[in-house]
Structure formats: C-alpha cells, structure tokens
Length: 213
Image (spheres, rainbow, N blue to C red):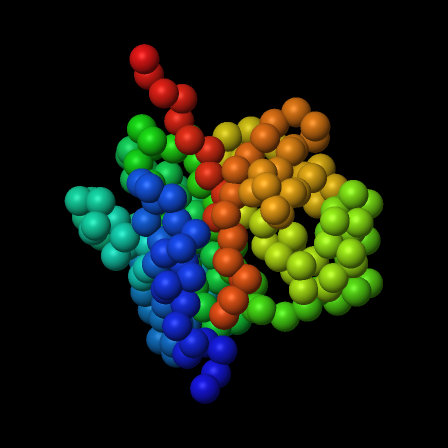
C-alpha cells in the first residue's frame, strides 16, 4: 500500500472547522487537462508535474464549489500566485507529489483560510534553523518530524494571511504553538490553526470574520 492510498479523509474531517469544506484527490495522469484556459495561462511555463497537481487541486475545488451551490468554474491564479475565488468564497489549495487538496468557506464566515499538505516524513535537520525559531526548536526538542509539521502550519498561515495583507512572511516571522493551535505573526497578530500528522501532514489556518452584533 502506498502512502497515497492510505485513508486521509477521516484525518481531514477531524481538523476541519464548522463552515469550512475540505477534500482531497490522489493526483493522476491526465489531471493537467482539468486546467481551464483561464487557469492555464498562469502555468504556461510550468513543468507537467506542476500543471498536473494544479489541475488535480482544481478538480477538488470545483467539486467543493458545487457543495456551496456555485457552478464549476475557473479558479485563475493572480500575478501574486493566490487563487481567485468566485464572489462570496474564500479558499486555498495545496499539493505534494501525490495528493492535492482544497478548502473553501463562505466569505461572510471567514476572512481567509489557508491549507497545506506535506508527506509524513521528517524535515531535513539542516532546514530546522530555517523553518523553526529558537523557541519553537526548544518546544519540539529539535524533532525533525515536528519540524515538518511546523513547516506545513507556517505554509498554511502564509496562504491565509497573504490575501489579506499582501505581505511576504519569512518562516521566523511566525511563532507557532503546536499544542495551543495558535501562531503569532511578527508579535502582532494571532492566527488559529488545526493540523493532522498522519497518514499525511495537513494544516488548516483560518481567520474568522468579525461577528456582527
């Protein structure tokens, strides 16, 4: 049994929050053909593996849009690299070499969301300094596997924050508390997240919309 064939949906369901839909797909040959003309422009110079994974992620995203009562439509990519979602929708897409995911929610409920997926493998030890702050390294005791979890969480947070702020974040701009499920960005802004660590590492970051009273 390959890692791609291990049941992932129960773990994804466990990290979802009310109002956020998440689904996934094993990337297959031919998924690159799912890219619509409006989407393909952004991937014209990409290798086929990237186009295939991006097509797979959009297959998942379009199916989720149907569950929100939206038509299956193009999800182009902006010049900054973020997906352009239909009116009233926020969302995020991710993939590794085998699995593609998408998450969407209603804009009235969430300002933004971000998702990332990583193989359930340790992070190279020489990357720990790049990904983790000194405080994070102390918390995870330099565990390379939890270092990979940190990486996924920070990628998901970046995807959630960038559409709102348009600011590029360094890994050390984000301080993550895996146990608490919160991260602080540049000591100013707190973001909530949830994650699973097996059979794949999947992280979801979310920013709820302010409640109207």
